[in-house]
Image 1 (cartoon, rainbow, N blue to C red):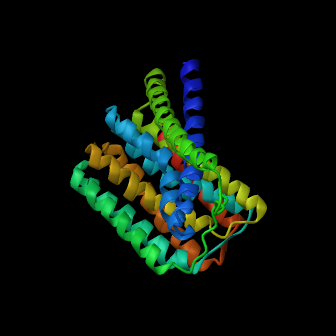
Image 2: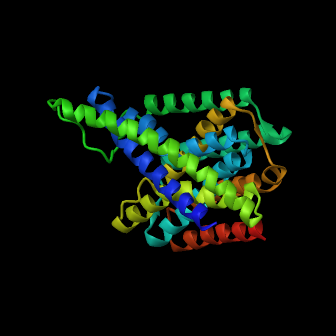
Image 3: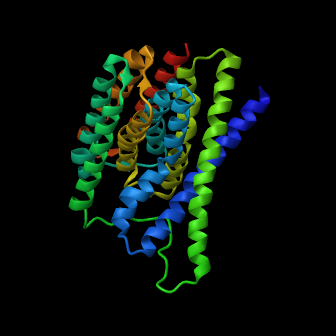
Length: 313
């Protein structure tokens, strides 16, 4: 049992390392080919930061534990908007951007609602996954066309025009290393989580909604805390909504294309309803408040605490 917990932690650490390394290598490689920072930020960085959740969900589906896959995404979305945003709001004020309210929130809620209707029959079919992924491509195309003037700040240095061959091989090595870390990390993470579920007599759904969801949301939580402490919270809400959009359209889209996902009735009748209520509940906070602060943080964390109490009891 102790060994499984150790492997779970090692798997999570490897996943986080893999995602970070892949972001840096892929971003620098793209910038080297004169791809704009806007496109890199909206595509490569977004996909790479969702890579841990993607690999965990794919691995779970292929290993025959679909509750891990669906629970991971639904749980991560709840964690992002309740736990991560709640903690960030307590540490520093989160300004409400008009673009976030007019563009990102409607897409997030629409994607969540569409997912709910898709799984009403008890599964997420391959054709539904294709629809979700095509919607993601449409959304990204829209962003690239209509946000050309936006400045995307990347946490990687732009390669200089003249660099030696070693630097190019280094970026390629980072991409390969990141991919390997994600593959093995997800494998260790799923294997140990499954053994812990059996050992403690806990359902795969609960493990997916708690341990897997919290684990794969850890990078967002750490990043948001650091940004809040530095006062760099301008993009916090938009980034978290964007992450939720990717989780549904990209992760569940790709996973269900590879293998049809059966959906646990408890997720359908309970957890995804919580996700919809939370996503909708963010709207009045954005409309009636110019920024999210202590009050909003307390409300969001109270919601998360209530949700954890309900599912664990």
